[in-house]
Length: 537
Image 1 (tube, rainbow, N blue to C red):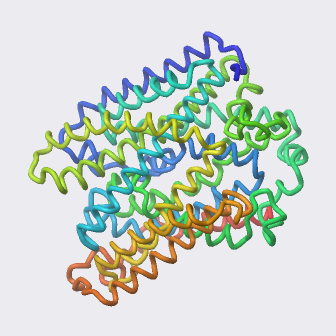
Image 2 (image 1 turned 30 degrees about the horizontal axis):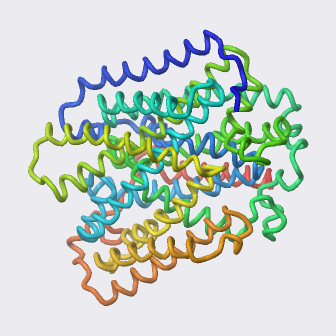
Image 3 (image 1 turned 135 degrees about the horizontal axis):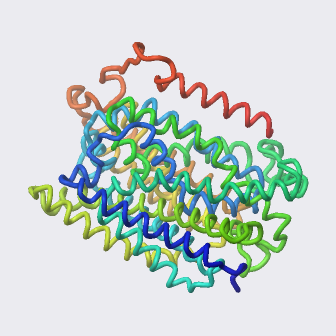
């Protein structure tokens, strides 16, 4: 495909200024890295407002921008469920009930928490599968950047991927998680500055949100109407698939178990800051669709040929809309915003799999007695190796016309079983190490078997298949974990203190004003989300 717009000097200046800026941030923060805790966990001294923005920004990569805009063009308002029902309840739940245990355990990673709660075997299984998952996600971000640059700037896909990978590699290699988090905060605001004009110009062009909705098929314009039957909506799902498959299993599985986002809460300065990290982030999450999904809606009338041929996949919805609506200068800001988002998502994956490799695999099984400087060197080497692996994974992501469907497929393989394991680990003290191990292993295996054995035409859409496969993988993991646990010896209550709800001290914030208390903030967030769902019913 030919590039859609002539790129001006101002646009290139903005893009390359951003490249230089993030590298300079890495160079400055490199001086602060003295221990392995500084490199991998930012010294655990960051305030909640920084970790909450980084928490959301780490998730605001290719999945959110390219994938959500593509889904907005393909499915309409139903895509909002990924942001609201498919995120906010789970983010609040992990903030209130999960992160106190993750943080108080002093675990340096989620797999390490599983070691404390269950056993070494469960930790190793989770670490290996998470490592593979984050490599694949990094590849998605690189593919997305390559697609953007090849379509809008005329660069080759391979060259675009390599340039983006090198920049991320440099600033993460220099400053570790600290560099990644501070760049994520900057990138979050840059995303708004660069992409909000797309939504505003599009709304002006079509006469506001009502005008945009009027240019969409009727089945695209509602959140809940049409979910009574899979045949009545473009996503081909029912209310059961949305509530159980997406909002419960996939959403809770992701936000509860993905160390990519949880690592930001691990870097918070105290338990309350760790709890408020995802809760603060819900308020941003509710409004982010303005710059992520609305451009996909705008693409529907602008490019009716989207999704009709391999040359016009839905993944092009956002870059083509940017090229169509933004003039020189603003176009450069828009491209830089996309670049910032993709680099943010990739950097989050790089820091997460580097930490898991160093602490849970290398230190856990190869060299247990290294000093801080040794583990920093290992981490930096892994940044390089992981980035190279992500380049290869980028070409795998290119095989899918909608990367959102690809990501949800990966979630159904891994995150749904992870969710069952963590849920039982925190809320059922009788769950045992071997119960968790076999439940997790067979749950992941069952998800792959369902994928390969159940014909794709059994489901109305790819999305429906992902939702239901995730549900059954979760159920199988739960059942196996419970059954095996009942026949194996559990840990004593004294070993579970600080790890399991019911045998740990409750945290009280009664002496704090309401606006600092996680519970009150959660209620406000849920009320706002309920009002929005009713309005767009």
